[in-house]
Image (cartoon, rainbow, N blue to C red; front, side, top):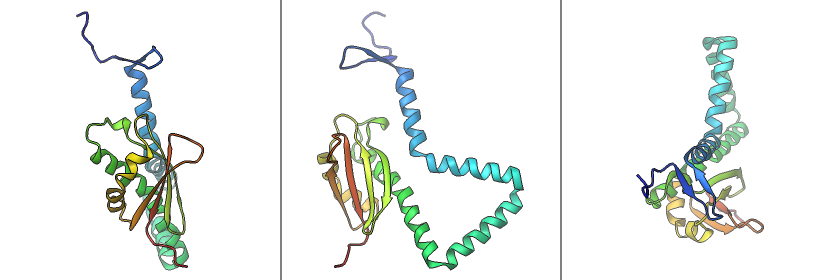
Length: 174
Protein backbone atom coordinates (compact mmCIF):
# COMPACT_ATOMS: atom_id res chain seq x y z
CA UNK A 1 0.00 0.00 0.00
CA UNK A 2 2.91 2.38 0.24
CA UNK A 3 3.29 4.73 -2.63
CA UNK A 4 -0.42 4.72 -3.51
CA UNK A 5 -2.67 7.71 -3.02
CA UNK A 6 -5.92 6.96 -1.19
CA UNK A 7 -7.54 10.33 -1.93
CA UNK A 8 -7.76 11.33 1.73
CA UNK A 9 -5.29 14.22 1.61
CA UNK A 10 -3.85 16.73 -0.80
CA UNK A 11 -0.48 18.49 -0.58
CA UNK A 12 -0.68 22.28 -0.39
CA UNK A 13 1.71 24.77 -1.96
CA UNK A 14 3.08 25.80 1.42
CA UNK A 15 4.11 22.21 2.17
CA UNK A 16 1.18 21.37 4.44
CA UNK A 17 -1.53 18.80 3.80
CA UNK A 18 -5.25 19.40 3.39
CA UNK A 19 -7.49 16.54 4.42
CA UNK A 20 -10.60 15.35 2.58
CA UNK A 21 -12.94 16.47 5.42
CA UNK A 22 -11.53 20.01 5.11
CA UNK A 23 -12.33 20.02 1.38
CA UNK A 24 -15.83 18.71 2.11
CA UNK A 25 -16.39 21.51 4.64
CA UNK A 26 -15.41 24.09 2.02
CA UNK A 27 -17.80 22.50 -0.49
CA UNK A 28 -20.60 22.47 2.09
CA UNK A 29 -20.01 26.16 2.85
CA UNK A 30 -20.04 26.99 -0.87
CA UNK A 31 -23.26 25.03 -1.37
CA UNK A 32 -24.87 26.73 1.62
CA UNK A 33 -23.85 30.15 0.31
CA UNK A 34 -25.08 29.36 -3.21
CA UNK A 35 -28.46 28.16 -1.97
CA UNK A 36 -28.97 30.72 0.83
CA UNK A 37 -32.17 32.20 -0.61
CA UNK A 38 -33.84 28.84 -1.11
CA UNK A 39 -32.78 27.57 2.31
CA UNK A 40 -34.06 30.76 3.95
CA UNK A 41 -37.41 30.46 2.14
CA UNK A 42 -37.81 26.83 3.19
CA UNK A 43 -37.07 27.65 6.84
CA UNK A 44 -39.37 30.70 6.82
CA UNK A 45 -42.27 28.86 5.15
CA UNK A 46 -41.88 25.89 7.51
CA UNK A 47 -41.93 28.13 10.58
CA UNK A 48 -44.92 30.11 9.32
CA UNK A 49 -46.82 26.96 8.31
CA UNK A 50 -46.35 25.39 11.73
CA UNK A 51 -47.25 28.64 13.48
CA UNK A 52 -50.35 29.64 11.47
CA UNK A 53 -51.29 26.48 9.58
CA UNK A 54 -50.80 25.72 5.89
CA UNK A 55 -54.26 26.88 4.75
CA UNK A 56 -53.94 30.32 6.34
CA UNK A 57 -50.37 30.65 5.03
CA UNK A 58 -51.49 29.88 1.46
CA UNK A 59 -54.27 32.45 1.76
CA UNK A 60 -51.88 35.14 2.96
CA UNK A 61 -49.40 34.30 0.19
CA UNK A 62 -52.16 34.48 -2.44
CA UNK A 63 -53.31 37.91 -1.22
CA UNK A 64 -49.70 39.11 -1.11
CA UNK A 65 -49.12 37.93 -4.68
CA UNK A 66 -52.28 39.68 -5.89
CA UNK A 67 -51.20 42.95 -4.26
CA UNK A 68 -47.73 42.72 -5.80
CA UNK A 69 -49.20 41.92 -9.23
CA UNK A 70 -51.62 44.86 -8.98
CA UNK A 71 -48.97 47.48 -8.13
CA UNK A 72 -46.52 47.88 -11.04
CA UNK A 73 -43.71 49.32 -8.92
CA UNK A 74 -43.84 46.35 -6.51
CA UNK A 75 -43.97 43.95 -9.44
CA UNK A 76 -40.87 45.56 -10.99
CA UNK A 77 -38.97 45.29 -7.70
CA UNK A 78 -39.95 41.63 -7.43
CA UNK A 79 -38.74 40.96 -10.97
CA UNK A 80 -35.40 42.72 -10.39
CA UNK A 81 -34.84 40.74 -7.17
CA UNK A 82 -35.76 37.55 -9.03
CA UNK A 83 -33.06 38.26 -11.63
CA UNK A 84 -30.56 38.93 -8.82
CA UNK A 85 -31.31 35.47 -7.40
CA UNK A 86 -31.36 33.50 -10.66
CA UNK A 87 -28.44 35.17 -12.46
CA UNK A 88 -25.72 33.66 -10.22
CA UNK A 89 -27.19 30.19 -10.89
CA UNK A 90 -27.06 30.81 -14.62
CA UNK A 91 -23.46 32.11 -14.48
CA UNK A 92 -22.36 29.12 -12.42
CA UNK A 93 -24.09 26.66 -14.76
CA UNK A 94 -22.44 28.33 -17.75
CA UNK A 95 -19.00 28.09 -16.13
CA UNK A 96 -19.50 24.44 -15.18
CA UNK A 97 -20.63 23.59 -18.70
CA UNK A 98 -17.84 25.56 -20.36
CA UNK A 99 -15.03 24.16 -18.24
CA UNK A 100 -15.88 20.44 -18.05
CA UNK A 101 -12.50 19.42 -16.64
CA UNK A 102 -12.90 21.49 -13.48
CA UNK A 103 -14.31 20.24 -10.23
CA UNK A 104 -17.54 21.70 -8.85
CA UNK A 105 -15.63 23.70 -6.25
CA UNK A 106 -13.19 25.16 -8.80
CA UNK A 107 -15.78 27.40 -10.47
CA UNK A 108 -16.22 31.10 -9.56
CA UNK A 109 -18.56 31.79 -6.64
CA UNK A 110 -21.04 34.67 -6.70
CA UNK A 111 -20.34 36.92 -3.74
CA UNK A 112 -22.96 39.58 -4.41
CA UNK A 113 -25.51 40.55 -7.04
CA UNK A 114 -27.24 43.91 -7.10
CA UNK A 115 -29.72 45.49 -9.50
CA UNK A 116 -28.51 48.37 -11.61
CA UNK A 117 -30.13 50.53 -14.28
CA UNK A 118 -28.73 48.34 -17.04
CA UNK A 119 -29.43 44.96 -15.41
CA UNK A 120 -27.33 43.44 -12.64
CA UNK A 121 -23.80 43.80 -11.32
CA UNK A 122 -22.23 40.66 -9.94
CA UNK A 123 -19.09 40.17 -7.89
CA UNK A 124 -17.46 36.78 -8.44
CA UNK A 125 -14.70 35.26 -6.34
CA UNK A 126 -12.44 33.28 -8.64
CA UNK A 127 -10.40 30.35 -7.35
CA UNK A 128 -6.73 30.09 -8.20
CA UNK A 129 -6.22 29.55 -11.90
CA UNK A 130 -9.31 31.49 -12.99
CA UNK A 131 -9.11 35.13 -14.00
CA UNK A 132 -11.14 37.89 -15.61
CA UNK A 133 -9.63 36.90 -18.97
CA UNK A 134 -11.11 33.39 -18.65
CA UNK A 135 -14.54 34.85 -18.00
CA UNK A 136 -14.12 37.43 -20.75
CA UNK A 137 -13.64 34.56 -23.20
CA UNK A 138 -17.08 33.29 -22.14
CA UNK A 139 -18.93 36.60 -22.62
CA UNK A 140 -21.17 35.35 -25.42
CA UNK A 141 -22.06 32.17 -23.55
CA UNK A 142 -22.66 34.09 -20.33
CA UNK A 143 -24.95 36.55 -22.12
CA UNK A 144 -27.05 33.76 -23.61
CA UNK A 145 -27.12 31.82 -20.32
CA UNK A 146 -28.29 34.92 -18.45
CA UNK A 147 -30.76 35.92 -21.19
CA UNK A 148 -28.99 39.25 -21.49
CA UNK A 149 -27.98 41.44 -24.40
CA UNK A 150 -24.34 41.52 -23.32
CA UNK A 151 -22.01 40.83 -20.43
CA UNK A 152 -19.09 43.09 -19.51
CA UNK A 153 -16.21 41.55 -17.56
CA UNK A 154 -13.73 43.60 -15.54
CA UNK A 155 -11.19 42.88 -12.85
CA UNK A 156 -11.97 44.35 -9.45
CA UNK A 157 -9.86 47.47 -8.80
CA UNK A 158 -8.64 46.35 -5.36
CA UNK A 159 -8.92 42.56 -5.10
CA UNK A 160 -7.07 40.23 -7.45
CA UNK A 161 -9.42 37.27 -7.18
CA UNK A 162 -12.66 39.22 -7.55
CA UNK A 163 -14.19 39.80 -10.97
CA UNK A 164 -17.02 42.25 -11.73
CA UNK A 165 -19.66 41.08 -14.20
CA UNK A 166 -22.14 43.59 -15.59
CA UNK A 167 -25.13 41.72 -17.00
CA UNK A 168 -26.70 44.16 -19.46
CA UNK A 169 -30.39 43.41 -19.97
CA UNK A 170 -31.47 46.87 -21.12
CA UNK A 171 -28.95 49.39 -22.41
CA UNK A 172 -29.10 52.82 -20.82
CA UNK A 173 -30.50 55.43 -23.16
CA UNK A 174 -28.97 58.86 -23.17
